[in-house]
Image (tube, rainbow, N blue to C red; front, side, top):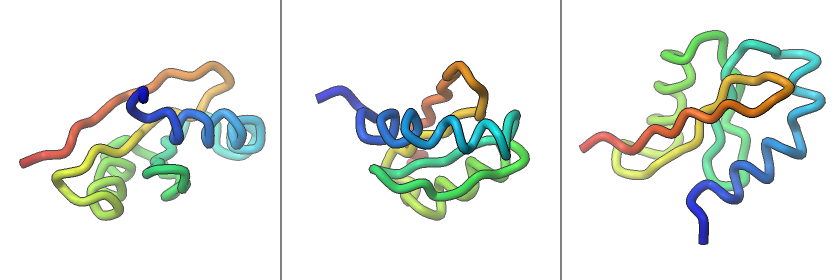
Length: 76
């Protein structure tokens, strides 16, 4: 199974609405759950760590009409 498959599918479903309201901001997903949308990558990263913990990966992507993923592994 491809890593982040659930997160990508969730974001693809939410992208049109998110792009209208939050273009240029950062979405954080953990599993099939949208953790939130944040103005900076730093804020998004911190929220991802809070949601997933430091030892589990989470998905962070800048919201735009064309996907541009940023994959961040957990920190040990």
